[in-house]
Length: 355
Image 1 (tube, rainbow, N blue to C red):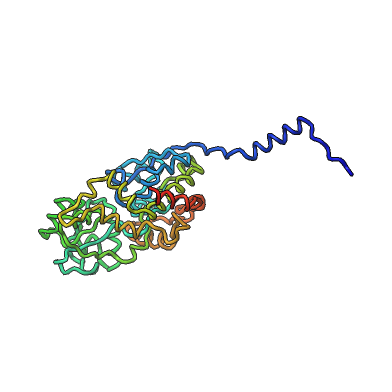
Image 2: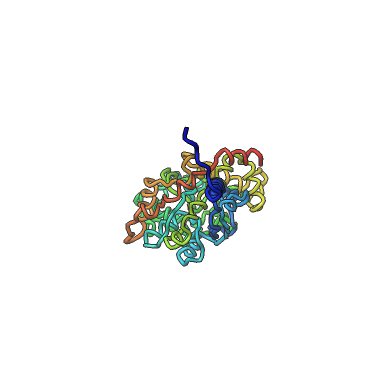
């Protein structure tokens, strides 16, 4: 019988070292900082619970990220800061993003956070106005001349054959405050186009409005993680980790909505101040977000809709002279979506159950 050879001391050490190496844990990813500009005076709104939960629960931290969320202002302000390179990412409304890329700005969507109408078109119940076609010759309130709703409103009017310059009068009346309420109540305007958040403010004041918003708006992209090609290259694979943390936070909230409501009430308590009927802007916004943030397929958080985006850009582009062609393969960057969805769902479900 052939005898087996004994390993010499050096060989034994080598094998031992190999065994230790194979059992060693993976090196943690390089820590990366990301500054995310939020399109609000506050850092969060009652829709942005996915980002809030991921931050509060430490999901970004465990993925090796130092994420700072900053309230920047309106969506136009966020786009300006992105293009200037002052922030790494942002969540401007898609109308602001669409207007930007259609005039050649370098903006990239790495993760679609929500789908549906951010802006709408409304009329008082007493006005008798029941459709966009009824707005011909009418005075329509808007939040401000450069408000994100203007592109949607103009495109909707054009679709009904109404020239937004000569066929109707657009009047800035503010963003849901006392000035807005008075303008609608006194008949200064016949209708109002603005963000749903502003409408919720009016509803809590007792104003009843008819929603004229075209149904196709519900298929449009609403918000995402928006960056630039320069920041895309600079942060590299960290975008995958950022997308994954966001998906984890969103999934957590879908499992435990009460926990996320509690988080929101802690950071934006004013949004949840109730009127005499127990209604608050925060509750209304949170309820709407339950139809806009959850993906159609929970195995595909952050997924982009090419068809919805094409329709959306066609609508916005109809209001922009000499609008440029947009390469959707560049704008809708899907590089990091597999990483985003590669997380332990059972673990997040347990986090939600134990919270």
